[in-house]
Length: 64
Image (cartoon, rainbow, N blue to C red):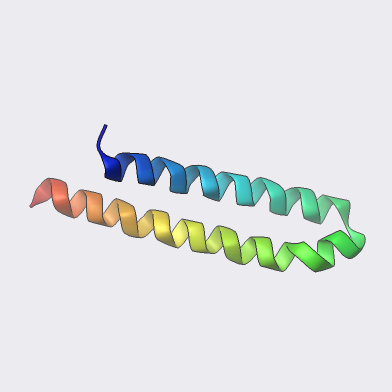
């Protein structure tokens, strides 16, 4: 397993963890929801974008 694959897997795990934490924050409601939901959503979006870029790089490296 090369380094790029490991980084992609870690980015996918980060996406899942931030999504789970965001769902927990929203389900709690109240102050927790107001304080953390938006921040966790943007963290998840960042992880997703990072993962997508890594996947595009991996595909480009395989085909080139």
